[in-house]
Amino acid sequence: MKGLTGRFGSSFIISLILVPSVAGSGRFPQLGRLPNLPATAALNRQLNSQSSSAPSVTSIQLFFTGKPVSDLIIGTKAKRYSVKIIGQNFDPSARVVIDGMRTRVSFASSTELDAGLKGGPLMFPGEVALQVVNPDGQSSSAITLEVVTDPAVLSTATVTPDFGPSGSQITITGVGFTPKGNHIRLLSRATGLVGVTPEVDSQDGRTIVLSLPEFVCPPCSLSVPPCAAPCFKLKPGDYDVFVINGNGMSNGFRFLVSSPTGPIGMWGEQGLAVEVTDTQVTISGACFVGQIPQTLMTDDTGNFNMTGTITPMIGPGGQARPATYRGTVSGNMMTLRIASDLGSLGPFTLTFGVEVHIVHPCA
Image (cartoon, rainbow, N blue to C red):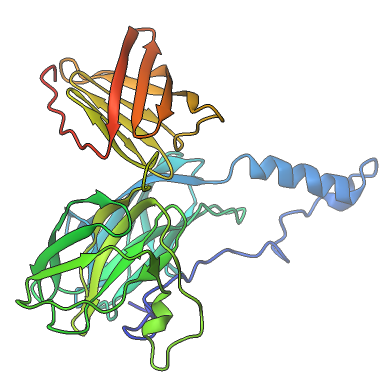
C-alpha cells in the first residue's frame, strides 16, 4: 500500500493527512463581477458559507472481503479492504483519502460513503489517517485506522481490568509476547496522543503483567538513536492499548485510565452503571441507556446539571429522547437524578471505582 511509510522502530504514528490547498483552485472566479462588494467581503462571505458545511465523520466500519474487521493486517492486500463511513455534509463527489492516497468511492450520499482501498500488501505496523474531502477543499477531522501484525504472530486477547488509575496492576494476555523488549502503547483517539511504557517482560510469551505508569514517552523514544522529545504524564481518559515488540504491533484493546478519585472512571450501584471518560458520559440501567456528549463537569460545590439523551430498552429498541442529568459529586460518591418526557428516575447513589455489568431484561 503506497504511502504506508511508518516503520517499526522509527515511528509508529502515520499521519499523512491530505488537506487540499485552496490557492489557485478557482473557487472564487466571480469576485471581479461584484462591483458593489469589496473582494475581501465576498471572500469572507463565501468562506463563512463553506465553513457551515464542512464534512464530519461520526463512525466508520472496516471490512475485509466483505466481513467486518477491526484493523488492517500486515501482509494482506489493501484492495481487499473497504470502509463504510457515516457522518454529515458529504458531497456526492466527495473523496475518501487514506494515508494521503485516494480510494474508490462506490456509493455516496450526504450522510454515508462506501469506499474501497487501493494497493498491494500492507508493509508496516502503525496508523493511517482517514479523511473525507469535499470538492470545495473542506476536510473532515482525521479518523485513525491501525495497521497491525498478523494475529497468529502477535495479538492481544484480554486486558484485565479494563479501567484503573496510574499505578494499578493490569494483566494482558495474548500470543507473540517476547521474553524481553515488550512495550505497551497507549493511543488516545480523542487527542491523538500516543505514548509508550518502559520495557516489560513476559515469562511465558502469553502474559504481561505491569503497573500502569504515571508517565509515558513518545514512540520515537524507541528509535535508534532515540529522539530527544520528553516523556509526559498519562492523563485520565479513554485509550486503546497495544503490545509492541520485535514481532510488530498487536491489535488494540480499550482501556480507561481513570482519575485517582474521579470523576473520570467507573461509578456504580446495584442496577445502574455510569462510565465517565474524557469525552462523554454513558449511563446504563436495567431498561434504558443514556449518554451525555461531554465529560462530567461540576461547579465549585460539586453539583452538575447536564443535558444528553435517554433511550428506553423496551421491546426491539426505543428512540433517543432529550434528558437532563442532575446530581452531586462528593468524594467517591455521586448522587444522580434523570428527567425526560418519560418521567423522572432516581435519586441514585453511586460509588466511584465500582463496575456494574447491566443486563437489559426489558429488551
